[in-house]
Amino acid sequence: MSAEGSSSIDALGQFKLTTALGPIGASVNFTQANLMMIVASVLTLGLLWLGMRPRAMVPGRFQAAAELAYETIMKMCVDGIGHEGKKFFPIVFTLFFFILFGNLLGVFPYFFTFNSHIAITLSLSLFVFVLVTVVALREHGLHFFSYFLPKGIPGVLAPLMVAIELISYLSRIISLSVRLFANMMAGHVMLEVFASFIVMLGGIGLLGYFPAGLSLVVNTGLIGFELLVASLQAYVFAVLTCIYLHDAVHLH
Image (cartoon, rainbow, N blue to C red; front, side, top):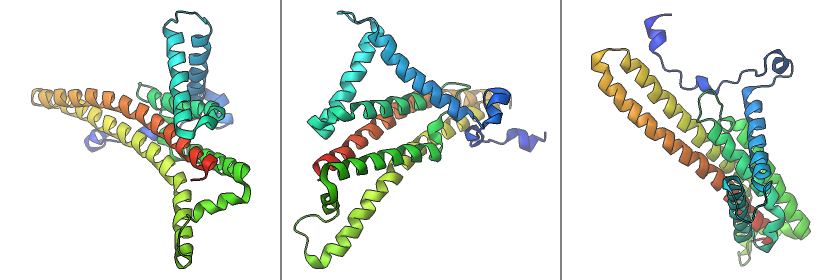
């Protein structure tokens, strides 16, 4: 390998999909993203199963964590949707922890952040979009389409307002998916770049030790920041899902 090739930074190489589980995975095109989605699902189920298994009056660590998770998401649903939000709790809870664990897993070495791929975040946002639309049609029937024409709009402005509201409604798909994808991808690119700086500067010799140390400090701070962003993005996705469901249920 040439010196130029060895010193280059391939910050996007970490997002390349590869087959997992050896020949079995290769035969069905099973990638590390699929494996991490299964791990995230198992962690979500494990949190509830291990937490609620003791059913103690004085909760232990796992039970307290499970109860806190339950109460937090339930409050989010009720506050964001209304009393009707209780029936949407399982969906919002699953979305939140599936995205949360998917984001957090990618921070650890040899793991993969499946939410760094637009195909996956787009699938999640399409699921929310279809769910909201189906709920609105079930609750209000054809009256749902009045959502795109606010009351009190002059007739001459009606076509323009309908177009604006329709574009705004459809843009939810893009905003949900791109926000999650872009934040997770950008964070991991920054981690990769500063980690490469540590290796490259350290290889220079004595003069590179100090800047390499600074890069290490920055990268350590970025890891903490990435953990915060990973949690925040899962929370934002769940909150926006509740807001969209509120619009579908109450039609405003």
